[in-house]
Image (tube, rainbow, N blue to C red):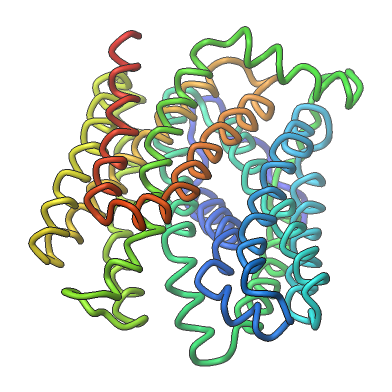
Length: 393
């Protein structure tokens, strides 16, 4: 079967292909988060010291950042279909290594490689942008990002539920099997796209700094999203701890269902994309940053009053803000030129995830020294600062 050609300039991607991209993105990005609720189980079985158990998450994130900076830009240099599938194959090998690991060393190596291989998701998004005309690009990217963000939201509760019934190794093994299926499907269905660039790899990587320096809208959109994603990871790092303690006293299963409820916010991504296609990027950005801050004021009230319903609403509102804004940012930077689209996406995502790392990094310290109130005020502050920066645009 021959690969399908790129979409006609007057038409969007077929809906079935948008759905395929969304599923593939969700499955790939979920690999970054499966280990987070399973750290204690994994550390005990592979002989990893408790004080070093957090290395599992750290190395996965470092691997992802490495892949963003060193592999994703290759989408502007190498044939895209082959690059995507080979990167997914790397993730499959890493997941199988994790499934079979018997020692801490091998598991930590596999965790880093899982992060590197998972950047295939950021190679698919520029392909989707290339296949979609500008007037429909926002809605297409929004729909695909719904799958990606749903993968982020659901990875942890699904991993908890599967590990509770079948063991943690099943989580990684099942993910490897699913990625094998999707690698085959994508190899068959993705269009062949060979970029025209003839620069060397080192020149390509070196150009990242120049792109960041010379593209102010990229810096702005990345910083808006970094501020929101910092609050997002802050919230979801501490919320399970909050929910397991009085007055909520939820079980692990109850916490998983709370995460499922919060994932309702995924509906915002395609709506934001359509609004951007109609020229409403600025007002939707303002809304996203404002609702991100406002969600934490509601979360503060929920924590103080012990209201689970209010906490669910705050989670949904926060997800609405985060998911809307990420789509707006990607649509904006994809307008800057197809020949640099992969590099722009790599820079955008690297800064965006750096914000997330800051949020999760300070979460435990904030909770220990200031409780939920300090966490909520910090969560409010991140997008509030982003909003102040936005008002200077």
